[in-house]
Image 1 (tube, rainbow, N blue to C red):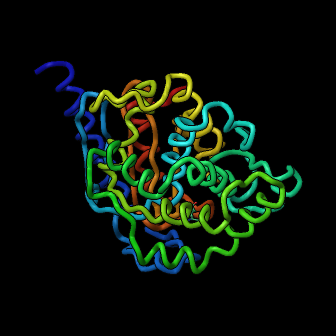
Image 2 (image 1 turned 180 degrees about the horizontal axis):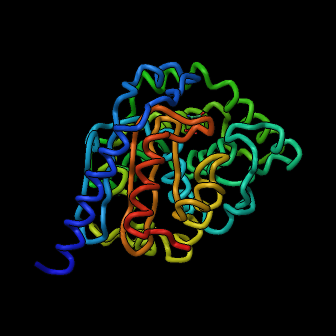
Length: 312
Ligand code: GLU
């Protein structure tokens, strides 16, 4: 048996045991219901995948069931905008943690319509504006980009979730209008929101998510397709902001206890980048008080501890 095969077997076994342990935990979090369509998801679902740079994907539980990626879509949006906009993007959005809830409005007023970072809603809506302005159909461009990265034509929007987001999107609309009033949104607010809700409503499995983001663990090059998705400098930048701002108001605690660049979404998914090794994606719909999935968090924490994955 080669060392690599030993490592693969060890990872696979660790994943299985960690998934079992998560299932034994009380599943007492709350499924997101401020977007009503998300509240209908089966709370018992639980899956994890670890895609490694050599093309292996270890998986346990519901790793092949597509779920609503929600805020994890902000990572794809940012990368696509970095490709198109270059450094000009950073004149319109910051790179500091916000210290406030992901959909907060107050900071945006104080800071003249410049969102703190691309992973709070205001920042992702700003990024959506740049995509709407740069593509003739930003939604199709976004979906093709994600499908190409995932190596799967299956990734698509859930129309029921999309309609529900759109109907209950007043707060996001308020953020967009406020930024427009400061001159930091170029396209029509309606078009920007349509793009933002579209990307949030995309569904992907743990396996697809982990595979799609492998370029972030490999200095910007997707190891399966060899596509140069972003420069090593930009991969570094995305990972840096993920480390400080990817896990809502629990980003500091996550860095403290896990130590990996990561992004979560209110659909219950979490992705975590392990530079030089691969990407972990875990999903379970019930959320803790910070909006992070309780079981996904416990699985990623367990795996990172057991395999010694912290970057710090
Ligand atoms: N579509 C959700 C919203 O804009 C995304 C929230 C999230 O996953 O953080 O409120």
